Image 1: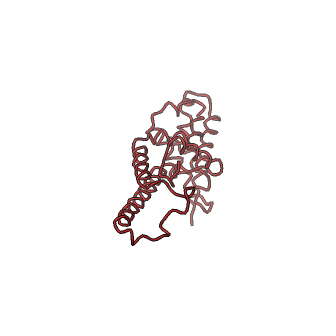
Image 2: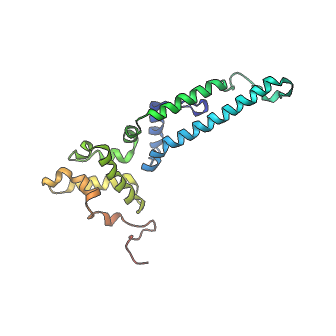
Image 3: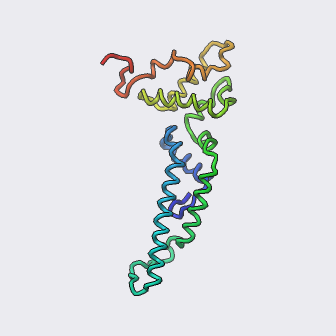
Length: 200
């Protein structure tokens, strides 16, 4: 992805995000914000380029008004032609419009990778909306504690693995997230470290 040239490719974006997350994993909300941020960046680039095209047309109509510093200082530093940037912006916006962002999210989100280690394998067999419901619980618990979303998800997996080998084990991970309150209390602390239900 080269936003300077207004060119976006999802495969490249996935690699860039993966490299970034090696240093700091993105939160669930941050991953979902990526498509919006990319659209905004492309629209801003498109607006600037169209404005530049208008100025170029005026300069062509009135060459005496052109300033020498408006000219490129070298081919190596020159940006792509404006019409090429406009075309690239439009293609990239179409790419963003048609992309499967649900699949993108589940491919790159760190918390999702943790939840997919569900020992019973039930989580991966759920549909997207059901998995999303559990991710929202993880997100909520992390927001109310001093722990990351990945840490909350990892705790759910740990409790699932340690649960008794009964019939309920088939949905152990999901029980420890959305359907059970028995493990919420240790995580439901405020950012100051006090339990959310503690007296002030």
